[in-house]
Length: 125
Image 1 (cartoon, rainbow, N blue to C red):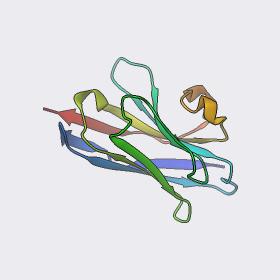
Image 2: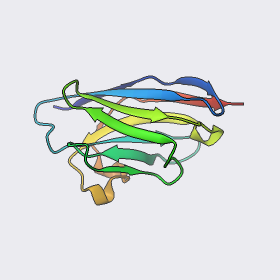
Image 3: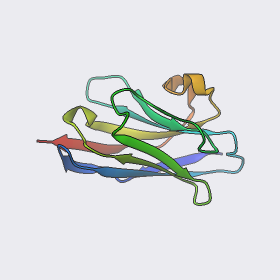
């Protein structure tokens, strides 16, 4: 059984920063990819970033590349998303997900079966 839970959302001004965390707990997570997704009001959920178990491979959506950094600490079972230079279009509910996915399909939310409850990120002017 895999359990994931996010923390760290909130309200931030344009250009500000937030750091999201996700605790991913289970036995046998060795082959699991951990990913961040987000869903803005009225829009479909989209992939933001993912990281392989070893941390060797990371992938980002084009709109966040250079501003967001995904990382993981396997010893503490924690996934992070450092978000800098936030924009209004980054507003949404951010979800942590875990699954044994093909990295070529990392941003397909249908490939993930283990999800957190989501945390709200609001970027205001």
